[in-house]
Length: 147
Image 1: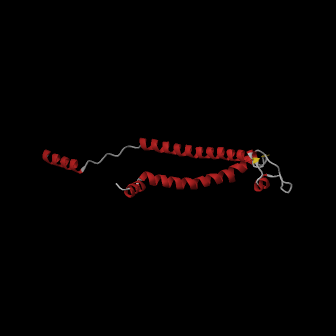
Image 2: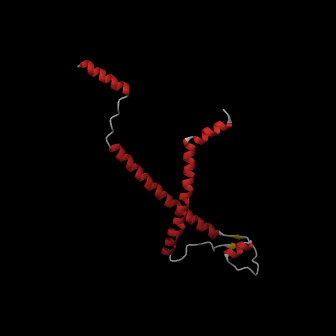
Image 3: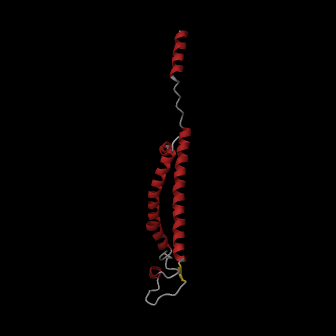
């Protein structure tokens, strides 16, 4: 089997296509959840905590600051001054924890819906299976012979 035919077999398999669709939808869904965290949840958390929940301006300067540079995170970073920006790390960690919780709640609700659907399907009466054509024909012959 040639490499091209093996690749074709792999590419048209259902699993590869399902994975590709999942990655594309996952990327789009990630943007939605990221916006939910940044634009809806984080402002509410900041409001509840009574201020701004942005720790990006927490840093420790590890080098010397030139005299003509303002002593804030953006200016120091642009100037290339070495610093330990632990505040940015804290902000990203908080965003990640909130993002993970939102995804957990969405997966949890989807699992509950799936379980509910499975219970409804199990409770529904099963439809009788239709006999194969040859069995149905044999039953007709049997009934005719009995008459």
